[in-house]
Image (cartoon, rainbow, N blue to C red):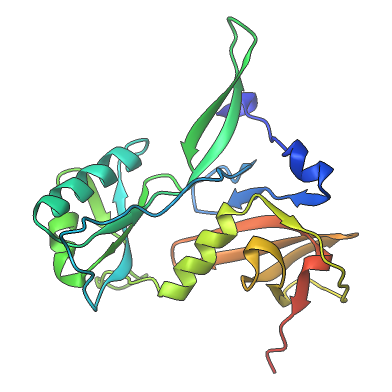
Length: 231
């Protein structure tokens, strides 16, 4: 979105003494722009005809840029027609552009992690996705040909992390320093774990990642954090 994009703080959140959050992608090749997340960015719902398999796991399909949602929906339709259980998640973000012609601001939705579709499916169905002409590949671990399965808790932790818009402030203080592992103990991010990236006054930049795939950072009030003792 270039120089036309700008951050938007939720006025209602500020008036109710909640703190706005800006999620930043740290995927390789991304511009790392901080933008406010959409409030409604759910995981898709699989067909009612299909039963969730016991080995269902999260994998990442790499597709053409700007085609993530279209391809994901098509994969879902094809598998639903075959009564194969499948869910997907394509993280999105809200950005704002100003029209050069009318000088009016317009809200648009963009994909947060470019070219990635998070696929929740049985390993037995992966070939049906990876060999589609519109799928470049399924992500694997560095130096390995095995398709990488994202741990369920790691995916859920990351999803909640990047989708947060604002949090209620709670009274808690603790000394923090770069590299410490912390846990959010209040609001919609309660239970999410991350690492301190930067501390500036009462604001802390924390980071979360899906190993081998992508990371994100968010700025949060230090009053919402507790240090995790890893000894």
